[in-house]
Length: 244
Image (cartoon, rainbow, N blue to C red; front, side):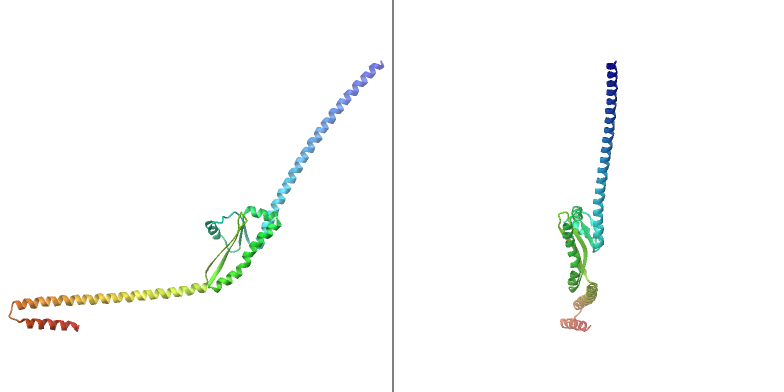
């Protein structure tokens, strides 16, 4: 009897123990899944926060550069003359163009930022000096901007043109030159017309002289007029036209 009760107690104990183990196992699985999900969410939040922080850093740095210099663009520009000429046409004098890889370095590394900002500052610092130097030569210096290439090199772009005073002076000189050329052409044309008129008159006189000589010859041939009279007539004709 006691043995049967003991067996029944052991059976219930094992059944209870199995149930407890099963419940514990299920709880452990639930806790592990919950912990894993929470960990994934935490990692995702950390990644998003890191990405947001990184984006904010570059945005903030670009805004700083724009406030300092003006028009700042992040793009690659080649160092060949064609690329530089093309980009220069889009510049307004205070443009700063930085290659994306260099910009990332500047935003992330204060030493890189200080180095390249120093290069950019040199361009703007030199502008007043260059303007004065070119003005002394009658030229107007026109700055375009700075380009920082992807290999880290820096190109300053600018040009010069005649000053307004110089342009007015050159226009005045060219106008006087054109007026002189027109006057010279007119004078040459008048001389040519006069020479042509004189030539026509000489041809007409020569033609009339030939006609008269032929007429005199014919008259001599048909009459008894002496050769001396013929020579005198021709000579008188020549003297007549000399005074015309």
